[in-house]
Amino acid sequence: MSLQQKAIKGVVWTSIQNWGGQALFFITFLILARRLGPSTFGLVSMANIFVSFVQALLGQSFADAIVQRKDVEDEHLDTAFWINLGIGITLFLIGFSAADLIATAFKQAELTPIVRCLSVSVILNALGSTHQAILRRQLNFKSLAARQLIGQTVGCGVAIAMALTGFGVWSIVSQQLVGNLVGTSLLWKFTDWRPGFKLSKQHFQDLFNFGINVVGMNILVFVSLRADNLLIGYYLGPKALGYYTVAYRLLVTLTQLLTDTVRQVILPTFSRLQDDKEKIRQAFYTATELMSFAAFPAFTGMAILSPELVLGLFGEQWHPSIPVMQLLAMVGLLRSVFNFSGAVIMALGKPTWNLVLMLLDTTGKVIAFLIAVKWGIVAVALGLLISTCVFAPLRLWAIYRLVQLNILTYLSRYGPPLLGSGIMAGSLLLCKYLLHPYVDIKVLLGLCVGLGALIYLLSIYLLVPQFFQKLLAIARSAAPASWQKKLQSGSK
Image (tube, rainbow, N blue to C red; front, side):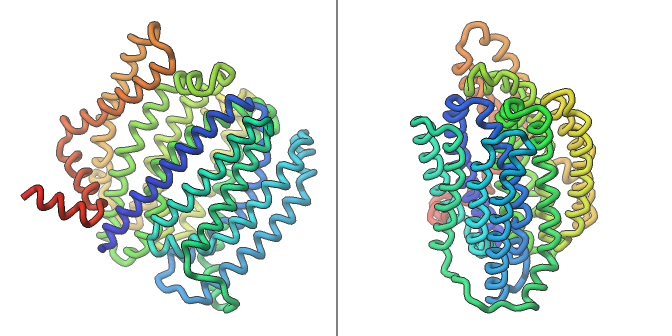
């Protein structure tokens, strides 16, 4: 099987993982949101701010170094595992000890036990980090998808059962811990490798030289993604953070379903091509086409259907989330254009470039949040959109420098999805205008989603048939070998 076929199959399995997992998570999120309310979600979001920071310190630094290296020895794997585990245990102890201070800072005494329990996830992630890196390096996304789906299924089942029987905030806490425990156990099951004790200073240095930049980026990513939550929770309280969290949750869901599906496959795939600029350039164009085809209509639909999504799915109590969701949809559209370029930069062995770009981007976001938070959650979302518009194009400049992109060729990849999304947007607005007075909001939402998808695909098929045929060719190459033979024989 060629590297291109492995990469496309990796996208398929990652899509299955993301779509299946996010479907489970979103259904669970809907049930819990209706059952628990904004303040409960705000509390868990506050606790997750600290846990996410701890995870950023541990992160995927050594794991990404293992994936990116051309040659990996047993000493690399053993060193990465034991260093990760040692860091994980240390960070867990820090989190457990600092829980009271965090609760005092937010003036929410209920945070102490929540932070302590969620800190256990740091150790669980450390135990599976090296095994996950091995599977990523092997492009074994089928096993990674199975691990993610099974873990999330068990975690979501526990959360729903606990929420329905009155456990409140502990439903969400248990969901995260159980999902992590099951997922880590499956990583060990799916990987033959077991840690030994071949630790080496030289092999640690090999990983550290690459990984230290990843740690820096992880911290900056944490600040970039969590500074808004931190400031909203501190200045506006858990209820406002709950409203913001619901809107942001849909942004995260769509991002993981669409952009992250491509991004997770790019690092190991492009790492194999790092010595061939022409192949990397063509692969980047293909990744751009796949990503824009799915992301453009999704985020456009999210912006137009935000009132129906919030009121129809979550209920009237979440009404303040609507304008936030509309602004965040535009953020998602921009991120889908630029964000996965970071994985390309990493694959080409330029982590310092990524670190500098992330530092600039994060600084802009923090300044925007500090200015906006006094005016409420809508202003914070607007600040995020503005800072994204200003700093995101820098990533395209970095890719241009590294692989000598043809800008016109690159921009042309966005033409068909942009055209189809524009036609779909006009159709959705007309549908809402005509049917809103007469149709229940949930029915209207279902009709609009189905109509939007149909019109988008028809627009691509009728107006840009060559683009549609290219997508079909990519889909055929991802099919099992037995299916490909049948398709070839049937076409003769």
